[in-house]
Image 1 (cartoon, helix red, strand yellow):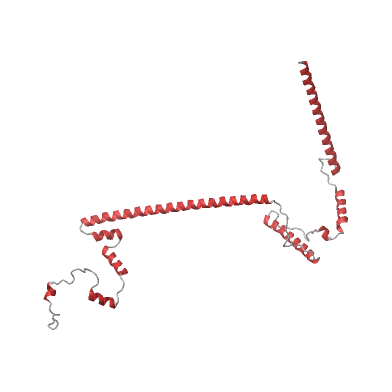
Image 2 (tube, rainbow, N blue to C red):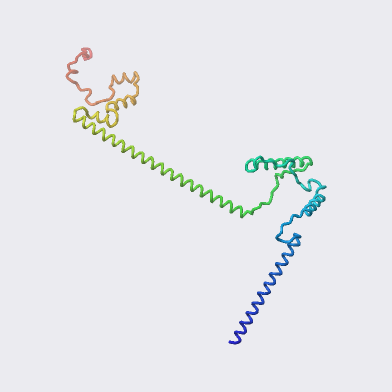
Length: 269
């Protein structure tokens, strides 16, 4: 038991020593980082200092290094006039002012390129490296195709719902029309029965009440519209041989034909 207690105490001491070493390393790393940042910025962290002298010196150095060089080495352009916006809160006018200034700069730079004989257009056979891989573009294409398919299926389902709704509406209108016609027929029949009891109506009046016209009128209209016009030859043949009707017994004598001797001839008989 004493040996186990001693081992546990020794492990505890070792663990405490490791934690102290870790804390010490962390503090040293933080101190080194702070010193490095102070060296880079030349000012203590946490304080904002406007070093005008340093900025002016840096400006002079840049002008000495690049100011006397060629414009092709810099490719810079500054607007010829200040940006003026009537209403800074008007998004459209403000963005249009930015656009006009940028467009003016592009035109001026193009003019300079043309004066120096430098081509600024990309060749037609130029192939640039794509920012995204083929696998990534294939996934995007598959996703777009899936979304397009879903949109098409949704539109198709909507169309089917509208067709079903329209078909149901048409069916309801037909049912209502039939019910209306049935009520009108029942009303006409009731009225015809009353007139029949009073002796003022018959079968033709019932047909006229139900269909709006009489049987004879419908037959005459049908016959007059569908019967073709006869020619003179057809009319003469009909007068000679008949034009329909009963065929059997047409040559049988009657009392009137037997007593008629106007066509009898002694020479022929």
